[in-house]
Amino acid sequence: MVVERGKKRVQCLKKKFYFHFQDYIDLIIWKVQFLDRHHLLIKFGSVDGGVSRNADSHPSFFAVYNMETTEIVAFYQNSADELYFLFELFSDHFHVSSKSSLHMNFMSSHSNNIHALEQLKCTKNKTTNFSQFVKKMMASLPFSCQSQSPSPYFDQSLFRFDEKVTSHDNRALIDPLISAIDRHRQSTDHPIKFISRRQPNILKFKMKPGPEAGSTDGRTKKICSFLFHPILPLALSVQQTLFLQASVVNIHFRR
Image (tube, rainbow, N blue to C red):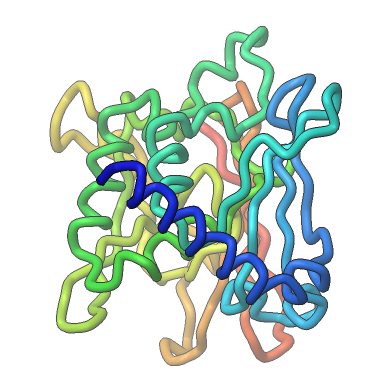
């Protein structure tokens, strides 16, 4: 019985492969990342998706390639549950950052930090479409070099940050206003609060991007990016609008 099921599964996979064979031939490489000294994580997609502004809406595939043996070790679609669970359990393996420097140890992920894991599980539990959630999570792979700030201010064992609650499909979603990975975030007129983890509910400091007096037009959509120094208490914030207004650059430092 088990053998028959195995044969049927193999036949089903073969049919699926041949049915999509032309789609596989037409794939191009979108992005490549080193996983270690022997393996590459390669992201494939269509030509149309490669030139589209919204590439995340197009199907894509991930391959783990062994450069020494020239073999494809694994191959996943961007909606594959197995790939997501590997990412959830072994997130640090997708970041090629040297741990030889002391300040690199402040980089939090859901693989090494319980607070980051709880935040991820909270978002996952509130989603109504797990397949779309997986695609959204996989859209960040492969990670760009130096895309994650090693600043201790982003260590989630030390601080938690202000969060924005949005509504989607009649469910409340929690979205942090600042992140170590997402450089561009929607900006608000309110300062971003950094709250101590070790002293619960104790406000340690605030960061306010944009003009000191605040925006005169609350309807204008604003995008802000942050650049933190890896070890010094120093950060830059750049706030931009969608109407070609001058960017507002602030320097934040500890007095």
